Image 1 (cartoon, helix red, strand yellow):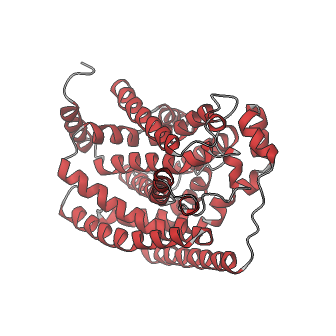
Image 2 (cartoon, one colour):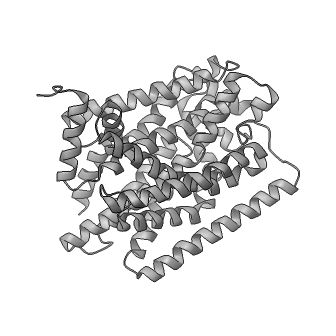
Image 3 (cartoon, one colour):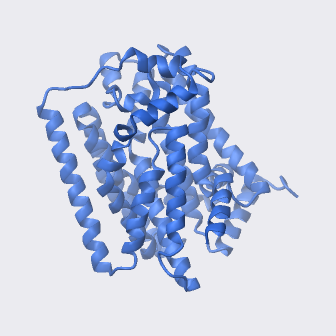
Length: 403
């Protein structure tokens, strides 16, 4: 009967069912953590003046502790810590997990004897189409479009030798780090040239109509798509690293998996956290190194940390059950969080961003907690009735017809 049993017993039963189906419970939890973490980054875009137009005009928040240094307070200190902890870390984790998912799809196709990439091209095409709709109708900082393009390249690389993949993987990382170093050097040596956010951009998201915001995204599509273009090399590296970690057994519930995760925990947090703190305190000129160089290291440490916690709670309890449920419908959760924030923050909805302008940042962190709780709870309730999330079910239906 639906709803019977304690949360702990339900979590243990779901974990056992996942193992029986060949799922890796740690991956579901990591996906859920990544979704909540990307929400922790994106919520500041929705709640700031001008909303997502800050991607074009805004430069506030590039240094997480800038507000605290200018005006010390508990709220500003908490905001700095919150932004530092979330900036780029969970985006990198989500990117790596997409690579893991691609490796699982490849493994499944090999077991069935299916031609590769073959039907996977339809999956990538669906992801790109979904990302395009998400970008146009909901959120300018969509990641799905970039993932779809990278997925096609990495899917092809899975048919090549390990040597070829290794060359592409490390070359992509080297080029990416060189680009970040170059851009950081330019920011550090050249006078700051941040365009002021025009009043009409602030008014658009505070009082403008939904269709006007859609038109704004389309008019500035290329500039708003700069992040996946600039970070293409990093995405290729993280996808291939995800493939390598999966094949090495990093996510398995055995001694090998725990050994690898222990190394990831030590090296990832041991190197990533000091670099993150240094870059955060160094000022806005170091934002790129924080988000796109230190953050991937921290993401590896998060895999080890979440795995360490999961090993000790044995995959049970309401928190693990809820986050795992969100991870099982991660695509739905990713889109849903942005849809919710659009209606809560922008003027055509509740307009909280404009109403709370000037208030301490506690309300933003409270909003993140409230939306997170809603997503986790809704995921648990949904999966008690259905086997997949809405968008996951839609994808399955569309792909079955395409094939």
